[in-house]
Image 1 (cartoon, one colour):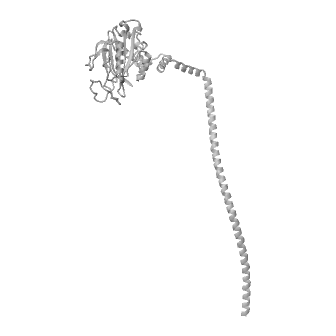
Image 2: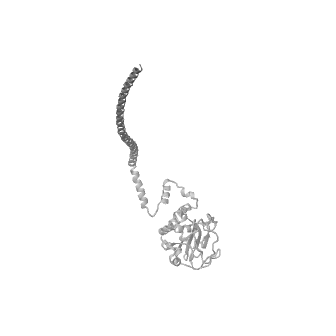
Image 3: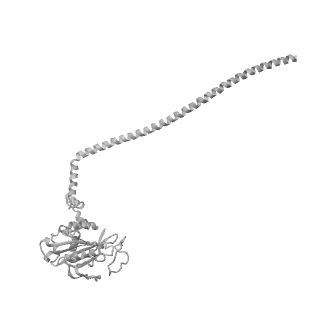
Amino acid sequence: MYELSRVRLYSIGPAGARYADTVLDLRGVGAEVPDPAPTQAEFFEEEPVGPPRRPAPAGVLFLENGGGKSVLLKLIFSVMLPGHRNTLGGASSGVLRKFLLADDCGHVALEWQHTLTGECVVVGKVSEWRGRQVSNDPRKFAEAWYSFRPGPGLSLDNLPVAESTAVRPPAEGQSAAQGRRRTMKGFRDAITEAGKAYPHLEVHWEEIHDRWIEHLGDLGLDPELFRYQREMNADEGEAAGLFAVKKDSDFTDLLLRAVTDTRDTDGLADLVSGFGNKLGRRAELIAERDFTAGSVDLLGRIVEAAEARSRARDIHAGAERRTRTLARRLSARGVQERVRAADLAQRVTAAAYAVTHAEAGRERSALVAAELAYRHASLAL
C-alpha cells in the first residue's frame, strides 16, 4: 500500500489559481517505516539519519475561495483517473483544458511512498496544446502519463521540465527548473534517455487511458479508490453522500460499478444471464432440491442400516470363529479322554483279577490255618 508523499505542479492551473512550480511536501512526519528497503541517495544529498518515516497521515490546506483547492484535487485526480468523464466536481469536459495556456507544458507529478518498505514511485501527467494554440477541439489537447522509481539520475526534484535543471537541491521555495520550458516531446526524450542510462528508474510512458489505469494497478496504486474519492468530492460534500441513494437501482448501479470492469461487460452479461436462467427454473430447481434432500435422508438411513448389518456380520463371524475353535479343542480333548478311559479300564480289569487271585490264596491260607489249629489242639489234648 502506498501513501502520498509529495505533489509537484509545474506551469499549470487557471489564471486565478496558477501553479508556477509548487511542491507540497508531506514527508517525514508520520510513523517509522517497519521494514525499510535499502536506498541510494543522490550525489549531493546528505546521508539519511535514522529510519525513514511515513508521510503525514493527514493534512489541512487553508486557502480562500478561488485559491486553488478544487484545482489541486482536479489535477491530482487527472493523474490517477484519466479521462474527461472522471473530472472531479462534475465540471464540464473541457475543465482541464482551461488549466493550460498556449505556451504551457503542464506537469502534475505525485510521489508515493510504500507504507512497509519506504520505497517510492513517481507517477505524473504532462499536457500541452498541439501547435501552441488554444483550441476548442479536444483532439489538439495532448496528454500523456509516466512513472518511474526515483533514484540517482531522476527524482521529483530534478524532473526535466526545463532545459536546465539545478544539480544541487534548491533552497526552500526556489524552483530547481531553470531555462526554457521543455515541450512534451522534449520531456519524453529526457526521461527516456534517463531510463536508458539508469535502468533502476523503470521509466514507463503511456498515452492511452486504459493502459495507464492497468499500469497503475501493476504498480500497486488502485485507481478504483480514487473513483470513490471523486464521487465523494463531487460537490465538495462529505463521504456519506456517496451512499445517499434514493432508490434500489442507484445502489445496484453503485455496487456494479465497484465490482465490475466497465471495459469488459461480457462477464457481467454472462453472470446476469446465468442468474436469469436460474430464476426461470426456480420451481424446477426447488423440486429438485426437495427430491435431493429426501433422497439424501433415505440414503442416510440405508447407510446406517448397512453399517449396522456390517457390524452384526462382524460379530457373528467372530462368534463363529470362536465356536469352531472351541469345537476343535473339545474334539481333541475327547480323543485324549477316551484313550485315558481305555487305559484305566485295562488297569481296573487287571486289579480285579489280582483281587480274585488274592482272595483265593487267602481262603486256602485260612483252611491251612484251621487245619493247623485243629492238629495243634488235638496234640495238646
